[in-house]
Amino acid sequence: MEDKDSQPNNDDDLSEYDGFSGYGKPLLPHRVGFEFTAVSQELPLSTETETDTEQTETDWQRESPKSQLDFCLSETISDAPLDASTQKKLVITSLIRVGSNCRAQIVVVNNDMVAKIYDPLYYKEYENGLLRRCRRDTVRNARNDYDTEVAAYNRLQKSTAATQVTPTFMVRG
Image 1 (cartoon, rainbow, N blue to C red):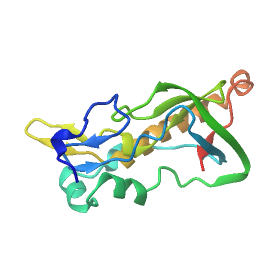
Image 2 (spheres, rainbow, N blue to C red; image 1 turned 60 degrees about the vertical axis):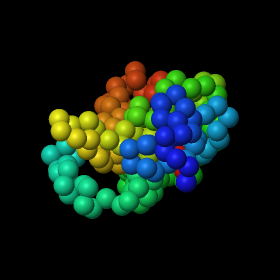
Image 3 (cartoon, rainbow, N blue to C red; image 1 turned 90 degrees about the horizontal axis):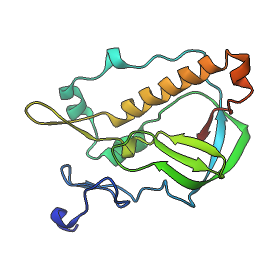
C-alpha cells in the first residue's frame, strides 16, 4: 500500500481515498459513459426512516466491519421486491452532482432523464464531533435518504396530474 500522504483526498478526484481510516475506495463508477440496468421496484405504501432507532456511536464502532467497503457490500438499501419484467438499460450522459461525501449521486441518463443513485460507499464516512471524528453508518444514511425519496414518490402518485409526468421508480440491478 502506498503512503497515505501521497493519496488524493478531495471530493473532485475520482480516485477516492479516505486518509483517516486508511482504506481506499474503488474508483467512483458514476461517470459519463457508465452503463447499468435499472429494474422496477414494488414500493411499500409508506416508509419510515430509522431516526428513532439509530445505533449509538459505541455500538456502531464495535459492530462495524473493518472497512466501509465491506460494510456497504454486506447491507442493502431496500428490501422491497423487484419486478424483473420491467428493466431499462441506462447510460450516464451527464453529471449533475457526483463525488464522495455528497450523499445521493445525481446524474443525467440517456440524455433525457435524471437518476439518483444511493451508493453508501460514497456517503461521508466520518462526522466531526466536538472532541473527535465519529464513524457514520453510511448504509443507514443512504437507506433513510432512499426512504424519504420513496415517500415523496408515493405522495406524487396520489396526484392525477403528477402521475402523468412522474416516471416509474426503478433501482439499479
